[in-house]
Image (cartoon, rainbow, N blue to C red; front, side):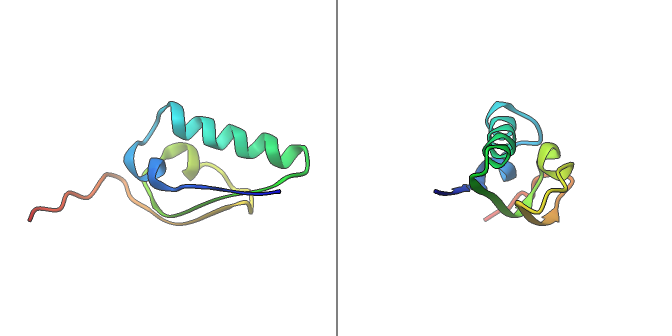
Length: 70
């Protein structure tokens, strides 16, 4: 089984329940031998920032959310 986590939660909150749940779920799935990845090209989440495992594909950490005015 291959599992991929959606990155939207890592861009919408620095800390929080869903993002921490995804991080812990990924750790435990990999511990039991499942292929699990978190891919987040742009993120503001501190839980994700502190992970160094190769199952986390992350590229650009933002210190705060960007606000777009249209």
